[in-house]
Length: 221
Ligand SMILES: Cc1cc2nc3c(=O)[nH]c(=O)nc-3n(C[C@H](O)[C@H](O)[C@H](O)COP(=O)(O)OP(=O)(O)OC[C@H]3O[C@@H](n4cnc5c(N)ncnc54)[C@H](O)[C@@H]3O)c2cc1C
Figure 1 (cartoon, rainbow, N blue to C red):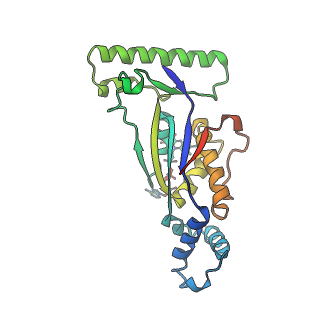
Figure 2: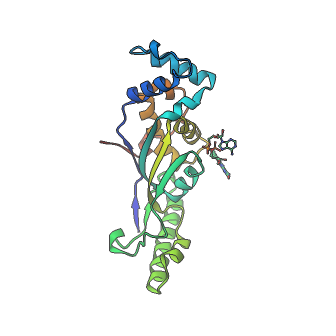
Figure 3: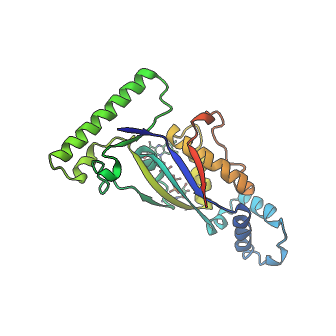
């Protein structure tokens, strides 16, 4: 059993271009394309968001990849306007060389009590033993996946439009969301706030969340 850290990778985006494209689409409503200037998108977007005219944000989308636990993707896949491709526990057979003949678990860094953490680790090791034993006995991957825990690491590719990202990030970076989601999505929200301030700057997040526990954040070319 290998304990791995979560990570999140976002495709390199040009926030300014995204906002300008949204502005162009939005101006169709008022036939005010002629009013576009270098920074006219700023007021336009702020006004749209303040008035709840948010469907214009659906014209642009962003894709991310991440390594998270099953609990995280279980929660994220509740969001109906996002698209997902997720490592399949039906097809990925963790007894194979390709997977290092082991189950990978996401480190629950938010379990700070040493005794509780030890219990969690012992349980994960036991589950791995049973998974491998079932495989040895000829069980199919479909059968073995029944015993995989929420902590199992999985790679996920997720795409959503800007409106849905704004919604997901506002729900999933608050202190009401599970810490395993917060640690992945707060860094993403901060990146969006830097790239697209007019859209994301008012999204509240849990500022007390320990930055040392943020997942590794990468930008792909
Ligand atoms: C802190 C927290 C705790 C939660 N606890 C639980 C729990 O205990 N059990 C549980 O089952 N779920 C739980 N959820 C999941 C939650 O109920 C939602 O299913 C999930 O957050 C998806 O969000 P959403 O409904 O806003 O949908 P999205 O699919 O992201 O949709 C975006 C928006 O579109 C609109 N929309 C989408 N579909 C419809 C529709 N059919 N009708 C009308 N409007 C629609 C809504 O305005 C919605 O907010 C929890 C979520 C959070 C953040």
